[in-house]
Length: 113
Length: 113
Length: 144
Length: 144
Ligand SMILES: Nc1ncnc2c1ncn2[C@@H]1O[C@H](COP(=O)(O)OP(=O)(O)O)[C@@H](O)[C@H]1O
Ligand SMILES: Nc1ncnc2c1ncn2[C@@H]1O[C@H](COP(=O)(O)OP(=O)(O)O)[C@@H](O)[C@H]1O
Image 1 (cartoon, rainbow over the protein chains, first blue to last red):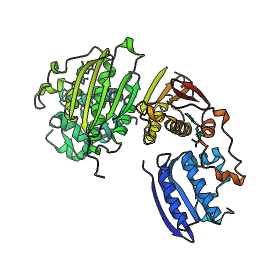
Image 2: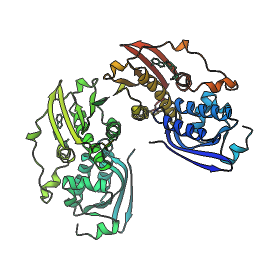
Image 3: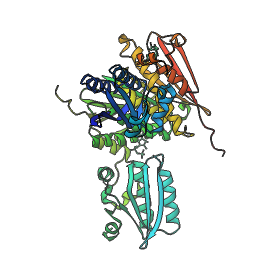
Image 4: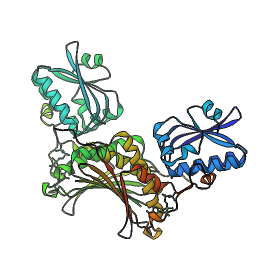
């Protein structure tokens, strides 16, 4: 299962949707895309993980790196995720306390962050 | 993927629907079910392979055995199949000339047999 | 050349795993086209089911070995059992489809199918058993 | 006890095959429940990606070996690389999630994840490298 990445603008946020498996083999493509967007000034980002079937620690690391860069530019990186298989990985690593994670775009952008 | 087998009566034919993979591991279950039906007098049989994703030579052998028993009791065993992946296996073995194969129940029971 | 090897107990309920591994290996870049993957899945099932059936009962602790070799132009899978061996050329042909006696035969389609579905197949004795080698041509890699 | 062994080249693009094989083996009767299969897929990905990264470049022709052992009550997978080895107890812990310094760390989650996701994990030196052994309990077989 390949990883597909698309992005679009929505209400002042850059929404990046990933679909497929984010593992050590495919994560570099996600890192490159997020870096390009951050570089281009998209520091307020919502990453939609609804179509992600699998994520490993390298995939998580890419998200952490994006969050650091976004925050250090006074932006933020927030997540949309309801898949219990993916949420469980955030909980197993404590990263559910690092990221704002909402069930929808509206919920995640409305959260305290 | 398990093999599931159901049967029903339709216009004087016993319609057996198989779903899943018919291979050397699962074919004995199909053979047992067909034998029971033939034993019980269901010698006019339509086997619906529309939901079969895979069939191997043991699965084909089970169909040949049912055809022999059906015909020797003055009945017949006909097939419903449109999946090119399955039809290809009948063609590769010449069994498309042994069985009446139709795209629908109506087509296969209307054929010369 | 890249090699992916799978060892399984000589039991028919592992065939689904074998199909999966071999097809996944053959789908690596440059992938076999979908219809050739179907051919491969079936040929491997036939050869591996023969290998499992031929495996000596007293060698039940030793695995059936499925080795996939990925070359630039060829995908080869070798299936190695610990059985008595056999002469594939000595197998009797099945009656024609139009011959009523065809219906007497519920078995014997495995080797003929393997021959039709692969680009090449060889059978040779190997380490206490038989090695069946099946080759399918890979599509050319796209130019860089 | 049943054993299924997979050998792959030390390359990260084979991880999807590894996940598939290990999860298929673990789904054999009595199958691990779906949520434990998820745990296993991730733990195996982490251990195998470490193994591939640790594998010595001059051993690139030798495989990373993934061996699944199916016992009555236990599913165990051993991952064997040809790398320099390491001391898992010497790894520094990551900062707490609430510590702003947490964001400085993009790596180092693999071993902690493996520990959380499996029922037992051991790391030991083995034949020119490391063997990571991960065990998950299998559900009891239904009474006959
Ligand atoms: N690996 C093998 N080792 C020993 N004998 C084999 C092997 N493969 C095939 N054979 C022999 O060849 C015969 C024909 O095989 P095949 O065409 O697959 O049909 P079937 O398995 O239905 O009999 C088998 O019945 C078996 O006797
Ligand atoms: N099989 C192995 N062989 C050698 N070193 C290893 C192995 N597995 C893990 N390590 C070492 O442990 C470190 C921590 O691993 P891990 O927690 O998976 O995080 P990461 O892989 O992101 O660094 C690795 O960076 C590596 O130095």
